[in-house]
Image 1: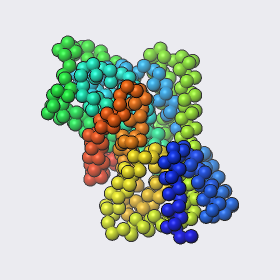
Image 2: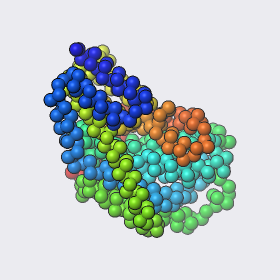
Image 3: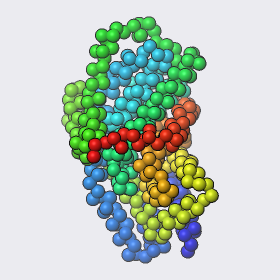
Image 4: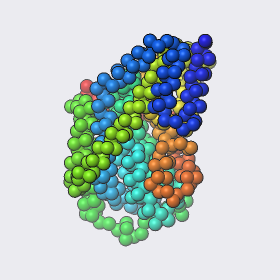
Amino acid sequence: MSIEWITLIMFGSLVVFLSLGLPIGFVTGGLAVAFSLLFLNPAALYNIFGRVLDIMSNYVMVAVPMFIFLAYILERSGITDDLFNAVRVWVGFLRGDFAIAVILAGTIMGAMVGIIGATVVSMTVIALPSMMKHNYDKGIALGSICAGGALGLLIPPSILFVFYGTVVSESVGKLFMGGVGPGLVLAALYILYIVIRTYLQPELCPISSKEERGISFREKVAALRGVILPLLLIVAILGSIYLGIAAVTEAAGIGGLGAILCAAVHRKLTWQNLKEASFKTMRSTAMAMWILFGASAFVAVYHSVGGADFVKELMVGLPLGRWGVLILMQIFLIVMGCFVDPFGILLLTIPIFVPVIVELGFDPLWFAILFNVNMQIAILSPPFGATLFFLKGAAPEVPIGEIFRSVVPFIACQIIGLVLCMIFPQIVLWLPNAMIK
């Protein structure tokens, strides 16, 4: 059978089963076994076993449960409330101060936990009632929460970077540092959008009352206590990686210990919280591992039948030029992101796309960050963007249609950020190149 028909059958079957709502880890793993027997032979199943074993024995994967544990501990530590209040006090003179504070708090939270769910749910519970009380436009209120929460996928320590580095043998530390610049650019674009729009349409976000804005400088400085622990945790994790003091796995351990200390300071370090965080960590890690194993097995089978060479020759041979092929990849990732989980997209596409990127002469580290910016767009895009449903779960009274509409301007900001990172690669590369080896 020709590779064209094999490609159509394999990925067509994948789309059909995923459309039925079946778990991606089990679908990809099951199809890998079936197509291995159909297109290869029973002995090829050893290749699947070997692929899974290689992943399980990769030391970098130790960081995954530790970063997840860090997120769940911080979720219960009470640190988010103090952080949001501290940030809002300093931006209270601006129109749209609550929405801007959500973006800033989401940026800082993203640099601590690397998991979007914890940030979106926390900001929904803390900030949404305040914004509704102050008669904020729902589009800005809901969109800012989704966009601010989504930054955790790009700003280190993002779990997606750990998976990416494992799949393509890229330095996770450099991936972490590469995500800082684009993450800050996106946060700045979100804030710029909120400021410009509320300036042009003041009725969307009424300015805070004189009493709320009339906070003395001394009180503002006192409020900064709420950001001390988050900043210390960020410095401990990212600073140790940047300075070459700790590897990613060691930094994850430092982060886990730091999260426990933060919970202790806020008197939330109870056996109940530890137990719940530990069980949630096990469930989330198991789910992530099944996705990793299944998708890796599926791609391994496709590689074995010559699929990677077929895609490489097809894309390099397109009469689009190297930049045209790169843009085509971005479009494909954005469309795929509307329907598939970012982890699944990574595992299904990156082993195939990276050889093409190298063949075209692009920097693979730069492309890795572009991929994560694309995944920012994916988790914000209807109909299956993860942040949309995290917000819906935390605020069930909000119609899903309003949530869908609210993210459109922020998706436009993300596309602008993606274009800027493509035009100016140093946004991505300046910090990894400055790392102490």
